[in-house]
Image (cartoon, rainbow over all chains, first blue to last red):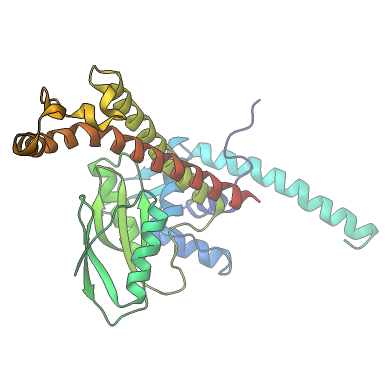
Length: 107
Length: 202
């Protein structure tokens, strides 16, 4: 199978998919991601806009109906959650390599 | 205060607007003909960023603008027909529109496409001019004067005919050179954007 263009996920995309497991609009997403990453990831407006457009294109996130007509709210789709599961496996594999080498020698 | 300036490169334009800001002049309007309106300001802690987005239809544009405004940017001017959006903000340490390499590269790619479209368009227009029957005056200015026997006329008759025909001659000579100049500038800009991507990847 050909690897998807967005895989492995960039830090920005990864955090957005994780944050959107609950419905949020762009600015709230940025705030939540800043909190999730302990202040290390602060997504700028243009990057957020482009990432949302990109993720919508692949149906990894979708708009959610709300009464706020100006701000669009999004949520990670089932497809997006599958991508997260694949990424989790990949990262777990890498983490296990760190742990293995911890037993034998210092990294 | 009004200033006239033509830019092919939006990064140069952005630099200039921020330079004006640092001298206490904040841009308040940008006209499509190249006039920039400035107003005196005491607040030097502001920053201007120019964004380039293609084809933002009405609904998408509302969404796009709302998002940027939520992030603290004030719309200074939007030119949807050529895709440029001017944003102003008080400096607070998060003064860029793009926070990662991927999205910065995408921006440069959008800009490269914009420049290359202009290069192609300019050269097509140039070809149209160059391939029609009157193309010879492209290099020979005398040929752009159509008045029969003009160059054999003398004295007042010559002067009168010459001055009469000059505006028309100019109208014949200028367009092809203008297309050539525009095309070359956009070609140059195209390579500058490409260079910016390469610098990011180093």
